[in-house]
Structure formats: C-alpha cells, structure tokens
Length: 229
Image (cartoon, rainbow, N blue to C red; front, top):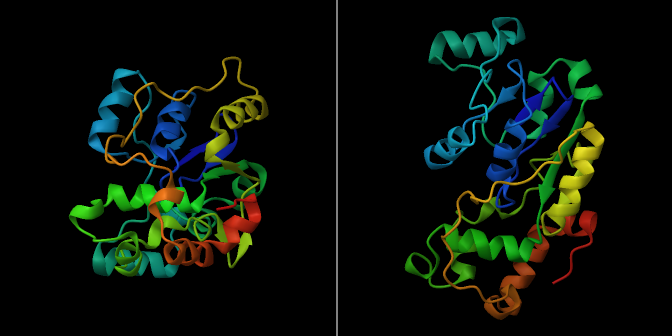
C-alpha cells in the first residue's frame, strides 16, 4: 500500500490485481515523507533498478499509539506499522483523520472467477489441490474475495474501485486526478508472473458448482462492479 502526502492519495493494495506492479509505478511519484510498504525481494530489485523509492515510513510514531497499542508494544514488542495488504479499517485508524477524509482513496478489483483461478494456480494448482473446489474448501482459497479489504463494516470505503480488466483507462484516470505531467505506466516487468501454466478461460476450468461457490463468496464485489460469469 502507499500513502502519498506529495499527491494526496491512498492506494490500498488488493490481492491478485497487479497490486505490486501498481506499487512500483506509484512509488516513482512518491516523495520522502510518503508511506511505501515492502514488496517481495524480487520485485524490490526491479523497483531499485527502475530508480523508484523503496519501503519507507511504514512504522507509526509513538504519538499514533493508543493505550492498547502501547501495551502490545511493551508486552509483545508489537510495533504499529503499515503492511502490504493493510485493510481500509486499519488504514483509517492509523492515519490522521484529515488525511483519510481528504485524500483520494483507490484500489483495484478483478473478475472474481478469473481471480480465483489465478489464485488457485499461484498457490500450487493441481500439484497441491485435485480441483478448484478442493482449493476453495481448504482455507487457502479465502483471499480471492477483496471486498473486506476495501470496505469498512460492509460499506465501501474507497473513492474509486477500478476494474483490473480496464487497467489502462484506470491509469489514465488516476494520472488525471493526481495532476501528473507524465501519465502512470506499469513496468514492463510484471510482478509475480509465471505461476500459471494453464491459460484456458476460467469458464473452461471451473465447474458449475465451483462457479457458484465463488459467486456466493464474492457477491458484494460482483454487484458493485457488475461482473458476470
């Protein structure tokens, strides 16, 4: 995730939506006071190669600690910090209210059936799970729904949720909203790619039962973004 005071935006990183590539792109416009959370080592190497800012300002100052946070620090050495997939509820809690209320908050989501299949292969595919159904029931398939990350108590917390499938027009819109002289571009290097060998359309992979399971679990983002199987 990124909080840019230089450009007054909050980028919430969802799962399986090119979030790491977006972080690399956005870190190129960040200033020294902005919050940038770490990404995997391989992707950090690419970010350094491109001359972009790396992780910075992730730890919260002691003034942001509430009494329970201070107790957790004393008893468990639990440091208050932003992390990769910090949900909206936690971001709101950790930021000054004027930042949360005044900055442009955005994220991406993706067709949930396509996202679930992508996540299935990223987690090992057939080598670990005989079917997508087994994967969904294993507990490791839970992150294919992102709605809980960008909502607070069931209500949308972002100013904009862009569709992953329309990423080019989303980049243009974000660039315009932020008043950038040079439009944002994702790096040619795509983070976390190469996990999926089976490139069939998700409709050819998912059974009717699996499609229904995903549709029920992701009903809120399906309604929000108008996705169809």
